[in-house]
Length: 321
Length: 258
Image (cartoon, rainbow over all chains, first blue to last red; front, side):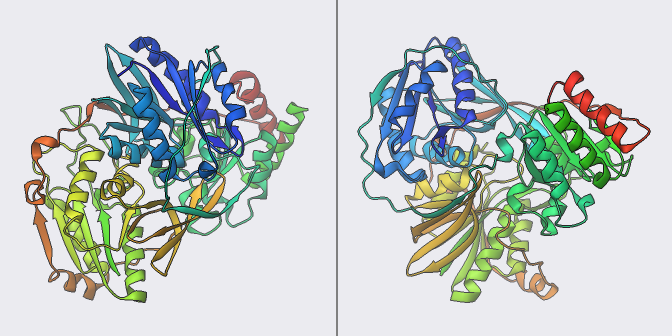
């Protein structure tokens, strides 16, 4: 076993996800604590060319598994390759982004390797050879500090919670011979909106709640577009069928940590507050000055969102020139 | 179709959660417990499949004696039988929970296993997928639609920025995501019938597991409430335009987020 940190890189439509750079940065800090190095593994098809980019975030070695069999991001194939790389690299810690793929892959690996797993962590450290992580539970109502035993330990990091910073690494490329054999799960189709920023990775989120009064989210969408952000929804808006379930922020939806969260016509039920309280700055726009969200917001405007949003969108556009 | 639903009893999502005196658990007195919302989707989907194809629905849960209430609710919705694994004094992490479930599943016929993609208490996102791995069967996560034909299950799943369609041969495990269905309520006759449906309780030792092998690898050292957010300021102004301009300025100059 080494004292190294192995970061599992993730790509979306040909580019590394931001969380991959965040994980490499967090991994560097841990490696310093353990006296090891940060390494990375990239899996996919036609990805060899982009792998070297990981060196600029400190990867000393980059395992590259480039094979047609890995074209579809299927957990089954990735888990097989990753288990082979871990066997070879012998890391003390495996770090992943807590994305849809990262969480599924981490769970498979934990069972396959009989290894400790802490999911969706907001902080992780290695001190005195011991890995501890901080992770939200109960949809963010509680923070747990957990210790992980055994080797390796697996930690997935919540996107947007670690600062990505560059640092030159040796970036030695090591090709991995891919042998996935027959796969049972098969991706037969996918529909991806290339321009859409996922809520969990967005720097800015504009959320519309019950106060939207219906399916017309044009005012929210316009503000989100002006800010380069994503559109969220409260549970009641999803229950009403105004927005898809994938847009839901809260305990039974997504927990988010953007730089700026703008809640429009959202009352602020405890489940919703739990899901967005870790945002850096919160703005609430609501007719009701007594709505619970107003007491949690850094900035609040009392008013009709259908009047405030277009005015705010115009001001933002002015500011951005 | 023989279907097993993995179900967990959790505090209702409207609950306030407070840390108990020991610093590593939560205050449970006064909490209302319900079926994990994602597992409720799993029960509903299992019933829909059984209604179309015949077969039976078994609910399998790991939890204390009290968790039998959640199984009974699932039986009242229409499931056929329940199995509760009571871990007693064992401290469980996600992987150990998966090991108990996988061990119990070895003696429960299953062509399809349906589980929530996470429980809204521990938020581990681990147990469903880990059970599939331990049983050596495929899993499909974050399912919002499924169809079964010719010994295969085909699912639409949510991923970042869209959806994917994934197919796997049965037996398989699928994990639910919101949008899959709208769970039915337990009817009064359903509740009456549920009282007579079989519900068996087992201990880890009954599953052929060596309890000594179930040392948790993840241990909670401390629980704490996240930092309380304090309200900031209400943006004043003579007009909507003035308020909007003041807010944009504050976000730019003060908060520096735009």
